Image (cartoon, rainbow, N blue to C red; front, top):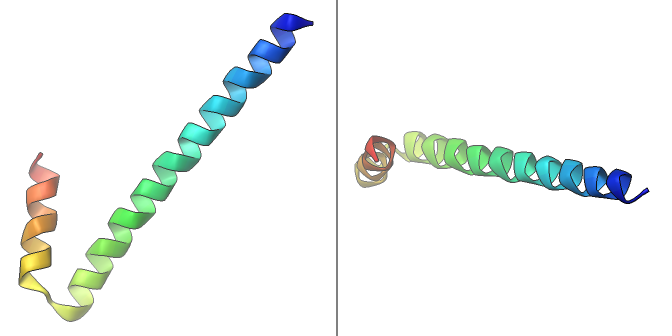
Length: 53
């Protein structure tokens, strides 16, 4: 019984880590889209610098 609950806990942790990664991707895409809409050269250069790292 304990093994099942540990497996469930591990599955839940993996699920939430995937959700967090997807949220980070969404935030990055939103930043790119916003910068492109206003053609903010400073923001675009910051994004490119972040991508290099």
